[in-house]
Image (cartoon, rainbow, N blue to C red; front, side, top):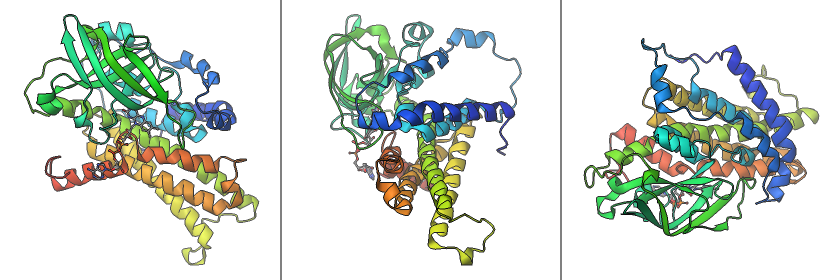
Amino acid sequence: MINLELPEEIKTDRANLHQLAKDLFRPIARKYDEGEHENPTEMEVLRQFNVPPRKKSDKKEDKPKKKPPKPEVGPSLQAVIRIEELCWGDCGLTLSWPGRGLGNAAINAVATDEQLERFGGKWAAMAITEPESGSDTGSISTTAELDGDEWVLNGEKIFVTAGDRCEAVVVWATIDKDAGKAGIKSFVVEKGTPGFKLDHLEHKLGIRASDTAAFVFNNCRIPKDNILGSAEVKEKKSTAGFKGVMKTFDNTRPSVAAQGVGIARAALEFTKEQMEESGAKLDYGKSPNNLSSQEKDYYMMEAHLEASRLLVWKAAWMADNGERNSLEASMSKAKAGRYATLITQKCCELLGPLGWSKKHLPEKWMRDSKIVDIYEGTGQIQHLIVARQFLGLNSSQLK
Ligand SMILES: Cc1cc2nc3c(=O)[nH]c(=O)nc-3n(C[C@H](O)[C@H](O)[C@H](O)COP(=O)(O)OP(=O)(O)OC[C@H]3O[C@@H](n4cnc5c(N)ncnc54)[C@H](O)[C@@H]3O)c2cc1C
């Protein structure tokens, strides 16, 4: 049973992050939307809040002897609550928090103590997508070949979030093409490594404060110890190892969904303020039969936002409590991605000229929200995952 009553310390943490989003992110949101590819140097102050990842050996020492009780709010739920607040401020800037890349999540999850020592403090992006491989991540063609004490990487990666500003990149590559998904491994490549070139930065529709890069690897040599996890290809054609890698998405998808909740909430709050300023005060006690179409639209959006948030919280709570949450993680992302897009569009519609003008942020939120339905698995892919689980079919039976 999920207890949705947040403890006092989480409420305080939420309020602090809301203040940060209001004071730091909102005032510069338009500046970096217009100044795409400019480095938001104001964000540097946030580095001091990054906590270095704990080594595995440290974790063993203070492991409690008894099984701990199920936490009401664990790190995943706290993370989605924080992300909602920050993205209420600005999603592109949230993605530009120095030192908190998607690659960091992968490093923290699987790196050895020695790797944590080398890479733990570095801002790490994640490079999976290729020109010929997007949703079907199992089809990547970047290769890593072992040559003595080094891996040699060759291939192209596109649409890498924080690819310019990061200090290292976690790159997915195959070490054995014949092995299919079983041959796919991830490697940490540090910036400045010969053969690793940033090819270009993307010009984007939304989240323009976040830099998105394309890379080329041309005989890029990295130390043998830069592989994350084992180099062993256990069983050719076995998907067990790949499924393990994909499981990291069960943790990250609710976080992406929370981005959508934050953006949509920003748009709804702005719309409500404007409606009230123009005299259309919302009266929640009014009979549904007497609502104007504007009021109906507003209440419907609020209900979808609340439903999105509850799905996000449920998926995160399950992760905190060691419960398998692939289904709920995909549901939360499918719902929040779709409704963040629909809500921000509808808000622009209800706001009329205010929604279209660059003087205000709703038109930007409409552009920013669409990304929630694209990265970390598109809406269609989330629906596919949900359908497979309900129907008991695997990925080769339902494509
Ligand atoms: C701003 C931005 C930042 C990004 N950041 C990163 C990053 O940091 N790292 C990274 O690796 N990638 C990143 N990506 C890439 C992103 O994850 C991919 O764009 C996404 O996975 C979709 O892949 P694709 O664009 O190649 O689309 P495709 O896979 O070519 O799909 C095209 C369309 O077909 C649909 N489709 C595909 N397969 C199916 C199917 N089986 N059934 C039904 N519909 C299907 C898709 O839903 C989509 O609508 C980023 C993308 C953007 C736009």
